[in-house]
Length: 168
Image 1 (cartoon, rainbow, N blue to C red):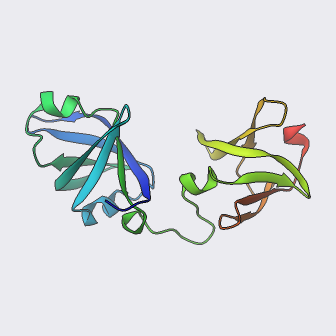
Image 2: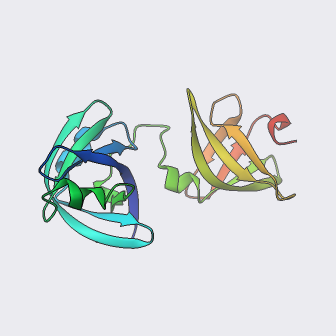
């Protein structure tokens, strides 16, 4: 597979008797999985490549079948696996959308002051939260909204913070 892989979903449970799996998609675009012919399934540091045999949408997720997994018992071993694909096969982004993996390679800045690196992106209900590692070692959660976040320059690895009270 390609050098840079992006997580597009996670296997949440088995489905039916033929080895299909329920998948929570990270993009909210389960139809994008239909264009995949294969993917890497990663769990516990172990990666396995599977050819996709079927995909059908189910709400914000999908039911996915892969070659070589033909029973619920086999599928159960993949529950918790991240599904990774080459960047060019991931769901396309709209303006002002970012892959979480790219945000996690950025550092948060307030003016010329470095606040700290983004460690992860949390789902916080209506808004995503950037988990930022402060210089004091404490984690800070910054709502990823226009009120707090200004310019995001993924290429430069820089996210501008508009209001610093959230990190003080």
